[in-house]
Image (cartoon, rainbow, N blue to C red; front, side):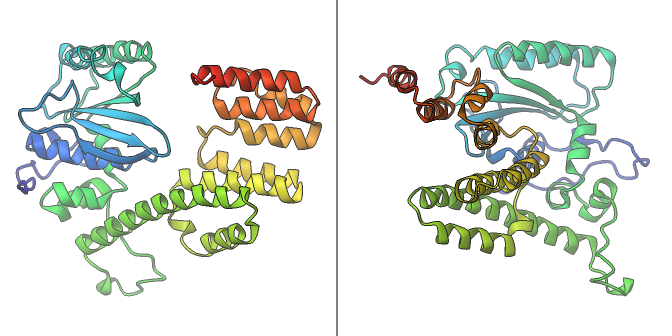
Length: 353
């Protein structure tokens, strides 16, 4: 069943005023939050969790992170006001299901977002949010609250979402996203400019196509890694060239960063070009500051200063890939027993004999 779009949000708000999201039907607000959650750079999919009558384990939204087995969760509250005790109750309801559900999931919960349709600027609300941030951190979960001002700011680059849920669309797109004007190089005559609705629809379509292009490229990259390992270097280079000359501008920052690190590895492996590899890794870090570059940085150090120095880069890294790389560096140094001990440790950790 298709829900009726929003038609009763108060118009004529003063410039800069927070839109009255609390006037939205609660289910429509939840759908808006779902679509906005999906637009986060780290998110591959986002869905509403459960239907009416089903237990929801303290959440409304569940999002799968890209290229990991981690998830992020959301709870939506369409209220005119949301007091500190209500903020706390959302957390209590979630953790009521922690021991018997979320802690036992095969995937790890990395972030929890509370979406609230009203402003939470009052100090007692902010103090409660800080308390809940610390509470979630004990479980290794990032905690965020997206109140009405944050939701408005998050919606600014997404006129397609605004137009889908807030009516009249042209009013709310202009109010939240600003006036959308095509570049002068495309449209010289203002009388020929498309309407805000048409422009927003086009931008929404481009956004969807960009998301699909990023997902497709991420899958192709996995295959290209295998192709390179199997020695099909020409095929990989052709793919990279085609990517650069084609859909590169439409890819997400995360996918671009992954491709750049792949290229950095190729520069080291084939050309021993340390400078170019570092340049590519730096470019990737600019796009995705949170990206884990420990292994490519270790390889760069290995080519520049030798495997002994590279081993120190991997200090305190206990994931399987880093342990394998540490063993590789030890083998390069002729320290075979130490390398084999690491591999034996991995087997024991994985329950192998």
